[in-house]
Every structure is written in structure tokens, then in C-alpha cells.
Amino acid sequence: EPEVTQTPSHQVTQMGQEVILRCVPISNHLYFYWYRQILGQKVEFLVSFYNNEISEKSEIFDDQFSVERPDGSNFTLKIRSTKLEDSAMYFCASHQGAPGTTEKEQFFGPGTRLTVL
Amino acid sequence: DAKTTQPPSMDCAEGRAANLPCNHSTISGNEYVYWYRQIHSQGPQYIIHGLKNNETNEMASLIITEDRKSSTLILPHATLRDTAVYYCIVLNSGYSTLTFGKGTMLLVSP
Image: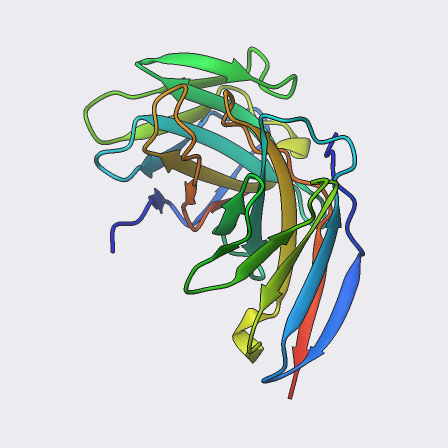
């Protein structure tokens, strides 16, 4: 069964450093997402991406964050200058449907645990 | 914020049916009810969704009341591996972003 993969599984970085989290969505999917979950808290939406551009973003997704689909398979989340409060589990998700379709089943990856020291 | 209300926790004996309720009294006509679950430290997993008819798949059944203001997710024969946080999410057909609430922590015990 196809699945969303994410690398690395755990990333430790120093405050102020740049990190890139990588995701490989399911191959025929058109919509891509990043969510995060701070330890003990709710899963929060960060950004959605469709047709090579951001389609929606939350207030969390400020100028420190960016996303990119550098090739036909990878989908990345970059945090330019990490802060302590960026420590969280970051989940990538994808789904097949285009806008207007009713099938919104999102497939989530296993997550990357980011620890900022 | 999430447009649904769920109990914070529930217990279920292994092998019995788990019935997880969800209130979504402000749901509008073009909004679907989706259920996801999150097993500890893993990514959320889709379970089932519906608009107004009851739905069943290999994982669960979804019962939606006639007025669509509430629904129940049924796991017919819960196993220990069903221990997870279950999220009920109302989603407009035109949007894809999932808004997670706190969900229901289901503990399945032997």
C-alpha cells in the first residue's frame, strides 16, 4: 500500500539554525500539507500546497517558514531560524482529490520530531 | 477552532463494540463528518467519513443522526491496537484543511 514517507524521523538543532524537513507524498496525489503537533497539544495546520503554490496557510506559518516541491516527488518544509517553540512533531500529509471533489481523505506520514536546543 | 464536541476519554473492553459520540450541532448542509485517529506518536490515520447516510468500511461504521447534529463512530470489535485518540472533524466539501480538536482518548483494555 502506498504511503507518505518523511525524513529524518528525528532532527535536533540549535536555536537560530535552519532546518529542512522532507516528505515524499503518495505519487498520484495533488494536494500536500504540513501540520505540527507540540508535545501534549492538538495537531495544528500549517500550510497546504497545490499546483506548485501555497493554497492556504495558518497564522503559525510566518516568514520563517517556507515550502517547496523541488522535484516531482519531494515536498519540503524549511524553517529559516529555528526557535525553541518550534520544537514539535511535524507531519506531512497528502490527498488525491483536486478542488471541488468530495474525497478528502488525507494520508499522513509518520512525522519528524524536531527538537530545538 | 474545531466545530465538534467529543468526550475527552472513553474505555472499552477488548472484543466489545466501541461507540464514540460526536456533537456537531452547527454543521451546515455541505459539510462532511470525518473521523481520524492518532495512535501514540504516529501520524493521524483516516477512518471514515459521511455526509448524511450511514457509512461502513473495513475499519468502522459511522452513524449520522437524521438532523446531522451528531454522529457516532462504531468500532465493532475493539482490539488493544485500537487504543488511540479519535478525532471527529467537520469539513466543508470545498476545503481540505483539517482542524483537529482534542478528540476522545479511547483506551481498550484486556
